[in-house]
Image (cartoon, rainbow, N blue to C red; front, side, top):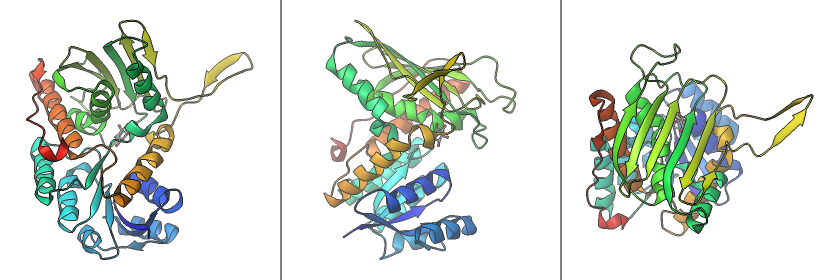
Length: 334
Ligand code: ISE
């Protein structure tokens, strides 16, 4: 029997997830959608054949829903995830788990109280072919041990991200998670470096900025975050290691030459660059539910990312290196 999914939040990513689940993921069907923009939910429901519900509470309470995708604005993630847990639902929570550590802690406490992992975090880059190849090459040891990562995360525009702290918790959170996963270790500290910002942002917003992490083993992770680069959507990662380098490139696998010019296309938005990863993520989530387990990043990963992001937010104002300290990992996430 198909896993019946409710999608809360039918903006860009919620709609992408709903369409993937309805048309491309095996073992799932979308039975419910909700958005505070009622018409947007009605339009998506009519398009994919799902019922538009009047509230998120009605979705998480529905006997026609087994699992819920939380794709609402970040500030709603914690409460909606906890409500879904308390109604016995499986959850795919879009990143971030929560903008603050306190909210992330509440979610983790709620899942520990349930006594079984039921939340998968929407860190879809872990399913991206480019990052999977990068990790496989690093783990092979052929390039030696990682010493330094150069990361670039550029959005063409991010009008709803007009705050340096939100850029860290909403956008840089991807680098925070993927580099923990890539290197298999936690961070020790973080420093923010910024100079002139683009005139496309308001006064005081650091865009671009460099976020410099040091891991517990001393690997330097440098992240350029630029959310208003104008030219396109680009995510890069180059590993500098003891015997060589490994470069994921920009994920555009085709380079063409004609008319005296050579080049490749550039993604317009994250659903272009990571379309395959979003689909693979959803299939892993549904497959995991069928096996009564979480097949991907857990609430602990969401919590660790929240702790790290909050330390970066402190570094924004302190303008000094801030330590990053995680508590012991709860047994549920061992
Ligand atoms: C957005 O929510 C995403 O998750 C994208 O992957 C990221 O590039 C963007 O900056 C976020 O706002």
